[in-house]
Image 1 (cartoon, rainbow, N blue to C red):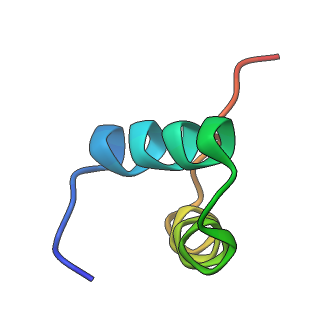
Image 2: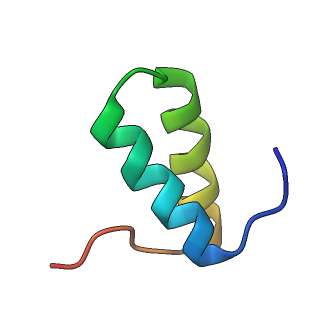
Length: 43
């Protein structure tokens, strides 16, 4: 995976969820977000 900033990572994850086509990509992005301790959605 190419190096992404935290903001790019979260935006890519949100876009992947919206499209819903790439299940493996969503899983990879979610693992990276969790590893970095980010929260992709505001509550």
